[in-house]
Image (cartoon, rainbow, N blue to C red; front, top):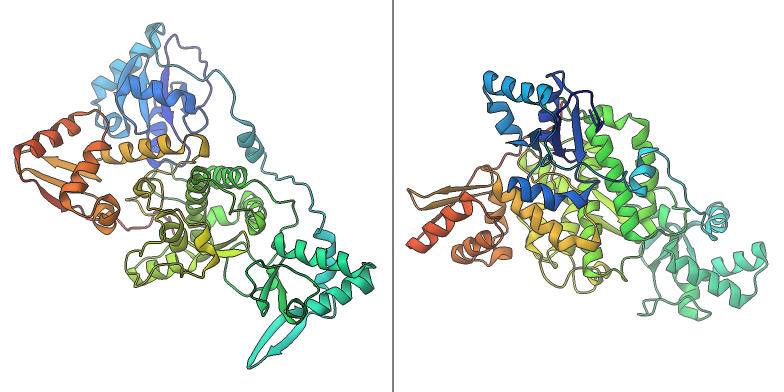
Length: 492
């Protein structure tokens, strides 16, 4: 599967994405037919998405064709009678491929995908990395007290300057410039004193008396902490794409044939996971403040989805409400010198610093440096792109800044096509929606009327949309919410 040529005169074509359970199940079923299948990954070949939607009228994957006959998705394939399935197989075996058959890609996968598939990560070593390595072993690093607080593994500004002058032969000005560079590149952080807004490292008394700590020595539970990122800082968008595609490839390799479960234990011992962890370390010093809205959306959605899987691998899948609360408030990455939990990313960054489910306050206070990165307003479309690891979540995808709004709208459209997310009952004049719309109702307008208007505006042209238009025009519509499937997709 995956070759685009076969000896049969016809062709079975399946459009899919990596990490899609329904795609995996469909391809397993098609594979048992003994026929070559052309598998087109729309994640790698986004240029075909519009054409596939034009041919099928759907935004979801998989989409399956026998020659030019559109079968539909995985559910449609599984519901075919043996007689109908045999007829379609005979069509491919006996009839030549018609001119209006669904298209195949014209070009190979992109460069960053190829790099990930090789399982290796190459980078240019940062010009301060060797100095930091020497600094890690300097005798000045130790415990220092300020008032009643003891700061372990810390050093003062004056100690750093003295060490740079004595051990590295720097003049005072050069030593201060180096201290400034270490702060700016997130190799070290200030842990006490010198609270001026500009954060400069200079010859002043406040700077010299302040205490600092190497970023890798700062105690916290981030999954990519404890080791220094030695590469020159990468562009945030490029790094998030590499991480997302690497973890998606791993996820796909350990997804069961029926698409229903994931072998997280197998993933955790796969050598490719170690390559992923090495790459995740590079998030420590990535530049966030210069990102545009589109870059922030793509970066943090990709990182959130990768972090969920990383959290499953390190801590296991949460199985009850308390474990889920702790998981989303505890699992974190060190990004740009700051710690971001899953809750911080979703509610602090992507929802414009709004309170999340069961949260009593906003994630970021007014003095929190992470607030500078937060979007100015909540983006409701992110709820259909974030994958929480439960079976009821939207399908996993990778996002790019260049076309992020269109990609997010496609994700919402695909989500609303599913009957486990949106059911229209014309007889009872009732709309049953995913719990996501209940939990984050404020993001969709705050009232049932505005919520239904939002849903209607974000549906693709389909019979479901026509039904919703009909009951909304008829008058009062009841809104209820479907049960949410929190069960884990782990095989263990």
